[in-house]
Structure formats: C-alpha cells, structure tokens
Amino acid sequence: MGANLWQQILEKLPIKSEQNGKMRYATWFIVALIAVGIYFMYLSATPKRQVEITPREHVSQTQVPVTTFFTYKEQLERELQDRLESVRGVKAAKVFITLESGPIKEYLQNEEISQRTTEEKDGGGGTRLIEENSTRTETVMSHGNNGQQALVVREQTPRIAGVMVTVKGEGGAALLEEITRAVCAALNVPAHRVTVLAME
Image (cartoon, rainbow, N blue to C red):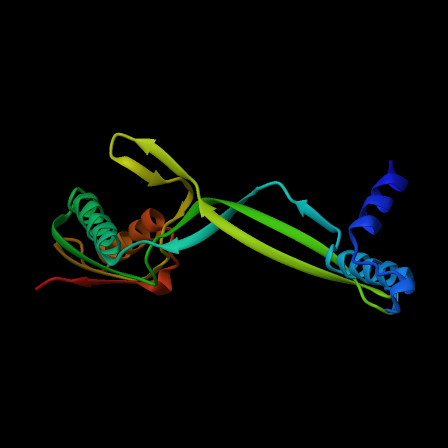
C-alpha cells in the first residue's frame, strides 16, 4: 500500500519528459524535501511528562479583625471584675487588661502542587529538560447555618501583656496581695505583669 501511495504521489508531480528538451524534476529533490519536513515535524513534537501531586492539607494563620480583638478583651475584663467583686472584703473593682496582639486563627487549606517536565531536542542531537512547578492554595470552606465559612483548625488566644486592677475594700496590703495572687492564677500571668492598687 505504501508503494502504491508513493507511486500516486509521483504520478501527480509535474514531471516533464526529457524528450521534449526540458529538464526533468529530480525525484531526489522531492524526497529530500519530504525528509526535511519530517525532520522539522519531529523537532516540534516534544514529548511531555506531567506529574500531578495529590492535594495536601495546609494550615494558614490569619489574625482576626480588630472588633473581635476588643470583644475578647472586654469580655476578659468583665469576667475578672465579676470574680474579684465576689471576693470577701472587696466592695468594688475595676480591671484593665493589655493584650500583645489579637487572636490568631489557623484555617485549613488544600495545597495542590503540580510539576511538569518537558524534554526538548535540538538539531545537534542534544536534549534538555525544562521543569515547571506551580502551587495552588485554596481555603477549605464548611457549610453551616450562617452560610459558607472557612474551616478553623485552631484558634490561639492573644497573650496578656499586663493587668492593672483597682479595688475598693477592707483589708489593706493583705487584700491587695490576695487580689494579685488571684489575678495571676486566673489569667496565668506572672506577678510582675500584674499591678493591684487601692481605689480612692
């Protein structure tokens, strides 16, 4: 079948007879032209290997908005004030807490890494490998009553920088020392970060 196809191609080519005194097209020129075409087609067709790495879970940290930061601070102050006012000898108390930073939430993320290796061949017979890496990260969302929300893996509460408490009550220095110990225990902070003063 291949020989018949080649014969059909040669019959369709404008080959002129030498008897008419005209030059005949050389068959080798046509064969060379076809060979060059095949060579260029081979160069342009580069085999590609693509490796897709399965998605993996990744955790990202994001600081929560300022409004949530102040809500947490106020709630902490209010709860501590309520506890201190329930202590015997304390008539009134006011609490001021300083935080180092806002709460940090860690969200679950899918990380998809793809790697593609391309092999190119040049005219001299040499080969070279070209590697391309790409990463795509996507936050995992959960469906709840409030719609779609990012899935929180862990929430880290802010560290307390310092606490100032003013108390009004009876007991003098002994009461102030007792309040200091209570604040240190309740908030898990060292004594040098806590100041307790008598209220006028």
